[in-house]
Image (cartoon, rainbow, N blue to C red; front, side, top):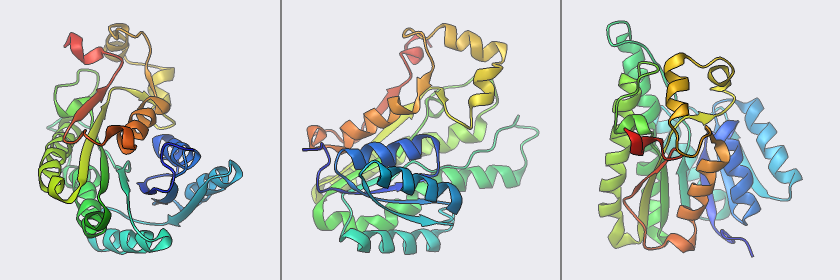
Length: 254
């Protein structure tokens, strides 16, 4: 018996990194996964991997979640595949970084849509499905949502993730009477294909941050997916509204 047997999990951004790992792990634990990604090619790769491993998955490629109407259409189509929604895992995101006096207004708006609005759109569309059977919303925040970051400017990223963290708390309050849980996971630095260049050649400020991590390593995608798996399972049925920091203990040192 898997920890998610019989559950229907909608996972965004499954084309690589944490999203691909989430699709694989959730399917391996018995969930029927419906995933989406903006990139059809990488999405198809994930679908093939999951099916080769014996998991049940359906993929939707070319889905632009920064568009509210497209998101609503995808959620309804995804819910129809297996007959409902038990888990909404908001993994996808689009980031822009730059100093406050150099970041363009377009980049500011793009980042807010790509990290905060993208979550709201998906939750709003899935709410009616979740109300029918209860379930859980898993959002991805960031330690940048609760503190400053030294090694690179993260002003709009931090602002957007702060919004995700607080939105999660309000969703927990609104969802409780319907049996809907809402949780947030805030990663520290995670090694992914998108961050590999920093691992290979870390700035001095970033290296200094890593050196202070009590558990003495950078995070892996599996560290976040493991947390999401627990929070999505029936082992966590009395956990809602939390922001779980997964950073090897780095934030306890300030």
